[in-house]
Image (cartoon, rainbow, N blue to C red; front, top):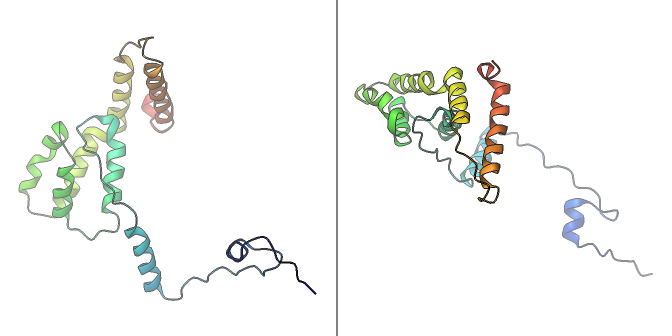
Length: 173
């Protein structure tokens, strides 16, 4: 006579399935590629924009900076000149000086040349390996009164060195 009601709320049964409710079939993918592109675009619009850090010429920071710049430009329809202008906003010191002359070149190839110069000067594996070694050899003395923060920072850097060693053949010699 009395049908026993489930203590699970109906929205939970619909979303996660329950013995009393049939499982929901997955939503089929759209047959229209433009609708799929619109949905992906709307999902991306909800994410915060990628803002690269300012690269100052420290080779240890170059790989992260380069990835951030690539992600910032992903899916953007920008000319080489626009990209070069944006990249310069995220450079300082020796890195900015290295490509300063390229701003005078009114061509789309200037951006590619700038990225090549930056990669050759700061992003090649030999330069990065030398930067790791230099930082390791010039590490500040760890003060025992700092509450283990100095030791923790050093340990984190050693982990970075170990991970970099897997990618950079120059660090294994």
